[in-house]
Image 1 (tube, helix red, strand yellow):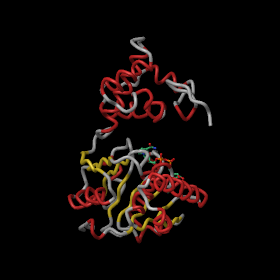
Image 2 (tube, protein in one colour; image 1 turned 135 degrees about the horizontal axis):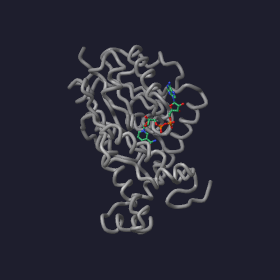
Image 3 (cartoon, helix red, strand yellow; image 1 turned 180 degrees about the horizontal axis):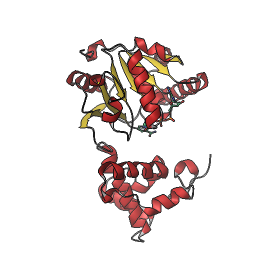
Image 4 (cartoon, rainbow, N blue to C red; image 1 turned 60 degrees about the vertical axis):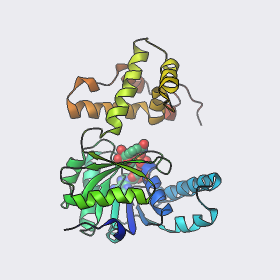
Length: 291
Ligand SMILES: NC(=O)c1ccc[n+]([C@@H]2O[C@H](COP(=O)([O-])OP(=O)(O)OC[C@H]3O[C@@H](n4cnc5c(N)ncnc54)[C@H](O)[C@@H]3O)[C@@H](O)[C@H]2O)c1
């Protein structure tokens, strides 16, 4: 079965309205697509739409979205709790929590409900796209679409090809990213893709520098900001991402490659054990005043 070309895509379904899902719904609606936003409870959908509305206000303030367009953008998003509604979608992006069994269940159910020519993408940040593709019957229309947080702001989408992904689904997804103003980069499926495989060892090594007493967190970040022009230091960024997430991703890389170069820094693990998860817990490499 041939998958749809990019011009035929009009309606996009997003599964999960959390941090990533509401951002993904936002960018598709902003670009004129009808969006079916699916979550498991009405209250989660209400919260997602509230966040999208607030983020649109921010864009209006900056001048990147016209105030007059806001009602139409919000009007294009149809919140649903019934998965059967995604039968109307030409393209589906899954953004449910990062748990293998949950993803398998949601993706195989979505695959059954969707039209056979529609494309199905997962926003997983660490699970094998090839493994998830195997949970679907139409794996040639399945691929990874790794958006960055916050989605309305960050340009990159890693478009990840599973072993099973067909050429037409892959090409249409790259084009669709351009249509919503994103910068797609094509990569093949491998642990951490490119983004986390390169970023996380950088953060991990920065943590080793602190653990070994080579430099303070401030000094490590200063070297990378002023010497390498990174907008944020690696440890500031680690606090922003969450130290627990950093350790989880290092573990995925370590297990995926079975290579000790990906072992998580013991200091990171110890900080996570202490409940120092970074910005969200009020303390990581830096301290933050609690909201
Ligand atoms: N947060 C990030 O920075 C980030 C970045 C890139 C990729 N990701 C990936 O994006 C995905 C989602 O992450 P998130 O941070 O948005 O999570 P989140 O917990 O903020 O949101 C997940 C949402 O999915 C909903 N959900 C649960 N089961 C569902 C189901 N069966 N059908 C529909 N919705 C369901 C939850 O109610 C919740 O609203 C994960 O795979 C994660 O690895 C996250």
